[in-house]
Length: 319
Image 1 (tube, rainbow, N blue to C red):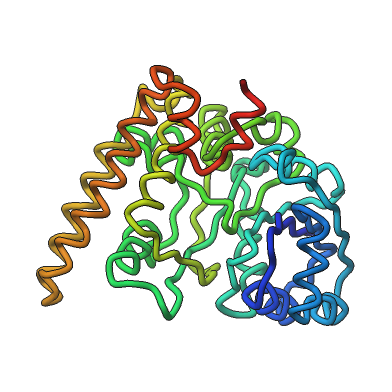
Image 2: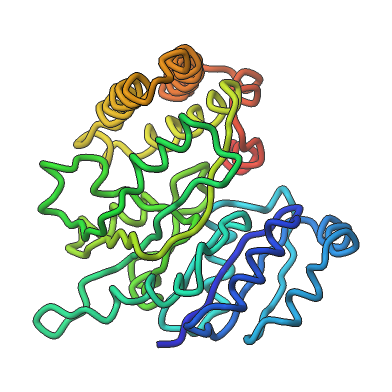
């Protein structure tokens, strides 16, 4: 199989340099890496500060660099731009802060596409396990464990009654797509404020394809979001869900969210850290407030929406 890696980049740093170094060490050598950088001057500034150019020269495969403006960036459209530059069999989308945990990431992530059922490939998308970084807080560390368990599994339409919203769960932090099917199913939605990966996965599942979670393919990726950051993130999450009732009318994300909260409280108490329940509560307030307003964004004025969102450029496209 020919594999290309597509990475949107914005203000790359030393973590991005480490990502490039780990890609150099992969057992499966990819065909090409396609970088989609936001704002050319920011790329030049980063290259002057970090050894990015050197790391790119060290890669055992080719790379291309395309610059886009901040206003034109879109979570779906920019990735589609990268996909349009590829002729590979498999597209791996990554974020610039997702560092391969070992040398077998690409190898393991592409394995599900060699499986066949009645002579026909059945997996549309495969996504990697996300491990917490060293500086990751206790609550976020547990959230990673909750969302990305140790066991791999394949999910399809038949799993909706038991898995609910998790049937469509997928993350472009590190995910591989069959390029022919990616094109056939219409690529990523654009413009999109959030969840381009989940929307595509849901479409694929409803068309009879499957989503593979590959726990053996591992990247180090986590964030220590504040309650305010959680507010903005969940506002955009709710806006994206409200825009797709055909998906979220049949499966509830609120139920999965409550399951995570209850499981986290239980974990904190059993781990002897009950005082962190208060921190969890504050985070939950931020998440729920953002989610509550995002669900009702159509009733809000433009100024209020721009105060709540993480993605003001998206609203410039849809207004």
